[in-house]
Image 1 (cartoon, helix red, strand yellow):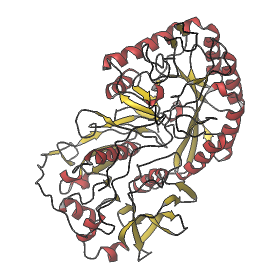
Image 2 (cartoon, one colour):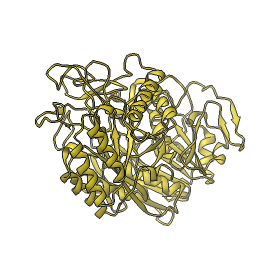
Image 3 (spheres, one colour):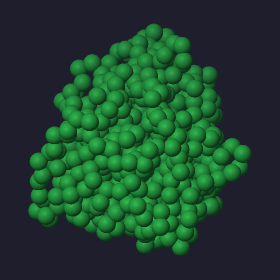
Image 4 (spheres, helix red, strand yellow):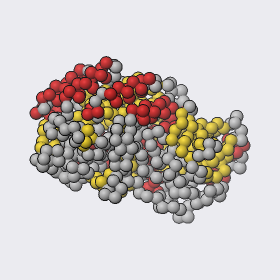
Length: 580
């Protein structure tokens, strides 16, 4: 096996120093070069398989796994007692999420399980546990089953294989261990009309789905399982992998109750990734009758007491002229404790003492704006975290630093003194400042730089409720252990979900306009945002959601909004998507 790097997220949105070339207002400008997003996930693929062509066999555990006791829910659904069950944003569907949990990369299996579960929460409740704990007959109590095979030759219970082959429930199976399923059925190829042949390690940078060319990071060295369809009346190719030489092979295939995806779709994900195809395949499995609907969202980012009120009014006027509802992410107290933008003089400005900004925010509300809470100060204490301690530059709920060699922002873990009460206190202070300023009480929270600890996420859920960001999640959360902050990854969504922290999450999946490269992130212009929105049209009921910094003026915003509208999207308010 090849070694894998522990995933380390690089520069998040907004995580870049302010551009001070055009200072104004309180002695600095709002031209930050960063954004709240990560443009590429560093979540790795499973290791390169031990053999290009696996041995078709059922793998028995070398050490007998201690079977978890079985519990029965009120609905008579069997599940191991160690299973995690959570509600979704809808009612009706109830999915079973299975993941690999043995060997040195068991943590990776749990991460894939978490990401599967978060996507599936859009459709209803879910139950997740290691595949090795599967109980005979368990899938009968679920709408569908999703298994991510991330460990080569993970021992799979024969009961699980038999229940898949019984053809009674839809099953989506990704990547490894398909050879154990075919070993259990001598007639699999005849019955299902397709068969795997081995891992294909060719460079694949594109996956064709519907009419969309989606990207795939070629640094993904895990390979894709090549399958061939022998009977097109029984098996259908749903998406196609395109090699560098232009030749193709099925990336995902469906036959009878089984949808097989040749790789893990959660690794090395970018905005335009084949992850989009997988997100829509869930509709095909759980809700195939879903009608086409394409909605868009725009959020005006990093607005504080130090913002330029004229910029805010100009943006509100433009969006109103296009009948575009919008959100405004507000941090209600500005701090520059190290004087980074004030000649070394520590500076604080509360929203209540910024009457022109308060007036501009109220004006934005009259033009269709919804104010949300973007932390309290959008920075931490009086330290560099990771830039200069100034509001909107630094993290508030998570520690980070800039690697001096790679120039990437590295996540270090919870801030010193982090606790549920710390996060709840920051949120309470923010509410108090909104109230003192005469602004509407926000009902949506966005983590500064999209980062917080597990207890911070819990506090945000309890004190505010709905979030509008991309969550971090950590190993241990699905399996019931303590969060492991050395293995931290993020995820974005093309539709409303309820994440592993329990909050309903409004999606942001396009990123933001960023004219300049920063911290190893390339520039991102309106054409890039529009292209990503067009790729997301592959999701039959998906959203195109981006955010925008007001210091950029209105020209970029006009191009982006009108390009998204011309692509077939209708802009809606964040409130309109909180309930499916």
